[in-house]
Length: 245
Image: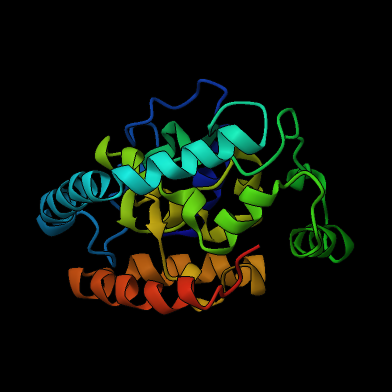
């Protein structure tokens, strides 16, 4: 990938949501064909990984149906508002989709820090610090769900629809594309995941630049074996509440 191609990709990424892309990789330099060093166009990624994602998500939605109903009931009883929270995220090739979560905040509290307007060192540091501090918008049930990452369970539906995968970079919002810098094309080359290398490497405890580098490393070295390793590492990361806020 040349510097010129990378610059063009990043410029197009910053125009996401403006109707300049068709969400299928067309309009990008080489249609991502210049990622010769990555294996994400192999049939194993396109078909085998997708089959595993679909089967696992379907089975887990059945297995977790009762706990899901109990969580939904706890949210409904303890706070007014919808059980689920949906927010637009950026997926593979810039496709936009709605990510599903169990609502963990009070209604009408979705005000987000404008990350794209924040500049280091103070801006991003402040944003990362706020994630660590007690947020009064988070409900009591929501704090429990976040601590155990249970608020992410509805994303099995996103996996079933093909918008997400079991393993991949965590889906980002439009404003976060600016923080990826030259690493952004790697994020856009794959399907975002329920878990990923960033999550099992410290999650919110590490800086954003390191997160972007981890995502690029995942794409460069992708394999089904690496996905399995990340899934296995996810278990102790969740049970140990590593970087969960």
